[in-house]
Amino acid sequence: MDACLAASLVSAAGVVALPLLYLWGLRARGLGQAWRRMRLLLASSVAVLAALSLLSGGWDAGTVAAALVLVAAAQALMVQFFERRVVTEAVYGLGGRSVRVGVLASRQPTAFATAVGRRVYVTTALYQVASPEEAAAVVAHELGHGEALRPLPPLLGLAVLALSAAGAADTVVALATMCPLAALLSAAAGLAAWVFYNWAWEHLADIYSAWLTGYAALYALERITGAAPEPPPGNPLRLLAAAYASARPRRGPQRFFLVNPHPPPGLRLWLLGRVLAGGVTSPGPAPAAAKPQ
Ligand SMILES: [Zn+2]
Image: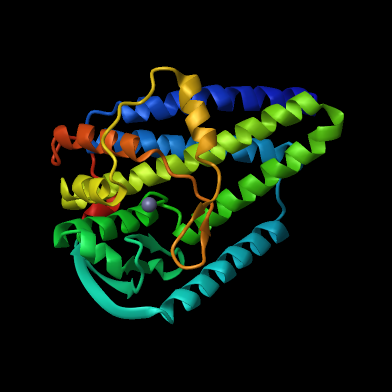
């Protein structure tokens, strides 16, 4: 098949299917169902990016190795940067394991995790706004980011995402002179896949936190974002517009800029409220690592 036509078909399918999958995920009735639907969205988003990247030749072993090394090096630099700024440590018992958390001095109440060593960091300001249960829920959310990528180790999961995104960008550039319309459509689909991957990832971390800490996950998110639950837009086009709007970089803790788009806090609260109302012990398989390891 002609590359322009193939890219157009993959892109059209992605732009239509991903928002619909997301809306379906938001309508899950319990934690287990929401977990499975958001995992499907995560995988589908990577599949769209991977399919686009295959159109410009895919990856060889050398590229894969280089991507792994680059992601690992970036993560190692990040860990080094933050380790030097740790003022104290906290320990949480979550999901049957004990988790050591680095505390950073900052006026911004936030938390984040690194893929290498899965180190979780929280800021001192978090303890000023959150109760102990809510702080534990925030730590559980950060662990959830790693759990969401299983069975891939987080580092490999990130490398696959980075490779697929870079390959998709390659395809857009390659098509730009041959067939500008197909290139434009591919860019739109690639960006949508990037956003919905990150949105699904964020919801999965929320769901995992709710699994381990119940309503504290919802209260913590409410307190940190100051948002109220809001139902998803009925019109998928409005959802797609919100997805594109969330793709701009945001200011992160310290000197970092964050490029991973987050879903609107109102939608995260809406899904959490909905699945928690279904009962924390609702039927359906638990996220694998919620079992003690
Ligand atoms: Zn998160």
